[in-house]
Length: 351
Image 1 (spheres, rainbow, N blue to C red):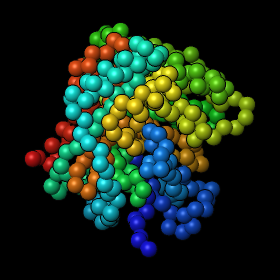
Image 2: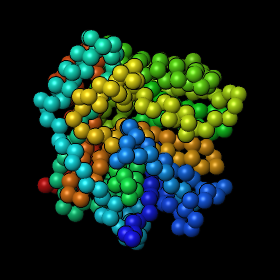
Image 3: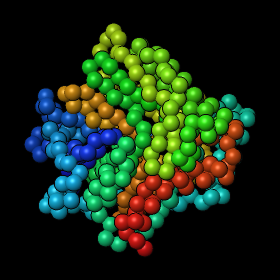
């Protein structure tokens, strides 16, 4: 029987200068101890090829970012054994623009209000590429993001720097985030009607789901601007309290997913349109990753990410489409988003 390396997750949270290293426990990996963490990886849509995955990790190792290089050299982890082949193609400009036009037809005729048009870009794996060293570089460059490296025998190897919190829970208090509307680094006044409307759709949808689960929410303030390197987003922090019966955070995260920020609105119509018109399998892109431990739960959306395959790197990006969207500008937005990781790849591994 083939032997596979154990699943692992490395995670740096926004604003922190250290990394938590989670690894599947060696002894009784299916028996949860009181101090164990449950690590979850959820795809955009659950399929036989892309199932929801989880593993148990003992208390994580904490490493400060300046010490990562020494630790990486000492551990000699078998990164290449995690790599998974995929037949995902590169989306052409013409195909992406046609995708947007197809979504807008659905909006005109079938009641779709918003949908996320996403695409993939396949590039050759750079010579001497090392996932752990690339993760360290992301930690240094993207201080205000969820920077992660996840390796799993079934899902493959994924890494990225996500700007989007899906859910944070501690005791009966929860926090989530409505994030939508993207431009190159700008102030709030530069966002147009399309971006403000798009962001409001996400806020309203999340608040509706929280109300259905009897989450007592605070009145949200006006949207703010979240700047991450060369990109700005509109975002609204949302806070609430779980009332009445005890609820698992994993159940609430599953109810929120996919928010209109990664799927669309109405949810069912958006997913139907994505399945009909997108020409590739998103797999775990626009899914989410989560940790539940004795102190609470944290789930973040798998964005600004890439999948490492045996011979290529797959970059992913998308944008919110409404009837106000201009297809060429939406293509450009995906280019800005892919540059988050692509520029770092070029800097670390020059052609």
